[in-house]
Image (cartoon, rainbow, N blue to C red; front, side, top):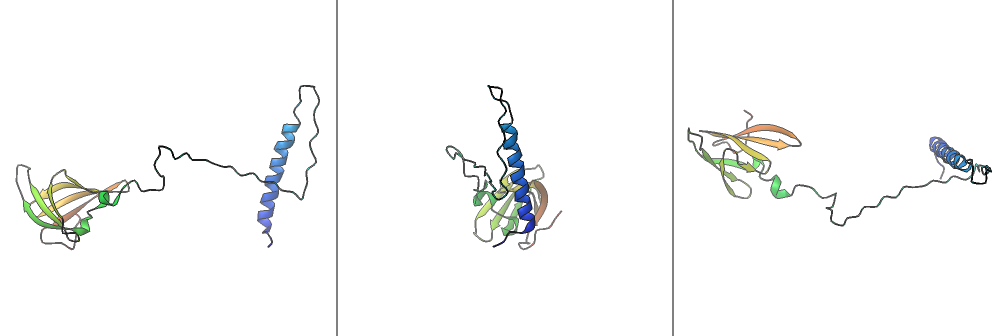
Length: 153
């Protein structure tokens, strides 16, 4: 198998740089005052060194595991259905939401968090959520009797 010309040229350049560093290190004066001569460079031999990194996992988490588990991601707004709204003009409104997949029921009030969603407003016929995803926030509204479509305000 033959190497591409560009790859061979890059390897030769790297070898020359490594050889120049070694020759520079040998050209320093030693305690006796003599300057040792550099070894002649061999054109056929290429030596490469590889850095090796170690990771001590003791007392640390696995860096490849997600920081969020699936319970923190659910429910999604597309999975929720607004069942009933108890609207109070003084600000103590409540809403009942149902997850259409798991049939789980949620009692919501303003400021409450469900996964990545926070209830930001409850009106007589809708609930507005602020959703935080990937450092960006957006608002989506879930309307009463509208289980298949989340409208943007």
